Image (cartoon, rainbow, N blue to C red; front, top):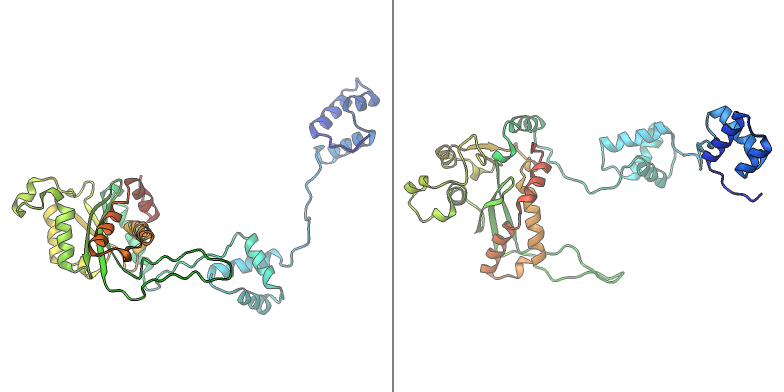
Length: 340
């Protein structure tokens, strides 16, 4: 009889026929189309394991050089200090575990532990974990649609250079790009959940406190169509912010010096909005930082340093409008805010 794989359900059916006792062994073998030795092996395996299926192979392949306890030690080292080099792990194993292994063995151990080599995300060591925890606990009293995220972004000719290109194997990818900047543009914008960028302003040079307050007055507090009216008449129009509690009634900003001052506080009190300052060195809590990443990628793609002065302003303003309402949900969620 030729060598062929017999299904387990067929073996189970033949054993049930044998247990029923109405058919002889010869008739059962004829029905199942397999040999007597196969029936004997299936009967024995059913008696020992409760199943006719073959047991899965255990411990196949070459035995591991490192025991599980040694592999766990490497994982704990990587979690404690993720930036160690492979030769440093090797030295630790020799010094504290009395093991001499190759660098490739250590690398494979990390692969088996699902630990890959990644770009380091730099975290500021000066920030306070207690202040960050207190902010996270406090900010959850506001629904996400109450929040408006505000921040600045500054770029020059050097920043928008392309960082990737193509060239033949063994050749440099060389592109002529500026190394000194002559003109610096600073943009300030506001981001609201489900609405995108609701206000933006671009100035040349650095942003001062007077320009920041003017941005709040022109782009945040009042409708942009009412900017030609006297300040006494602005109250008759619907503002972009609403008095707290209400949608877009809480301004989130960092602790930059221009964000503080009696002018900012007076403006917030006049329109009934609240200001929540981020903990020190915590830009990851500001959703608009994610939007700035999209904006920088767009400006790097179009190469803003090739534009003239007026076109650079226009392109930077247009980049703020690229933030769609759908993007804002991901930005807020990535920054740790509960969307409900």
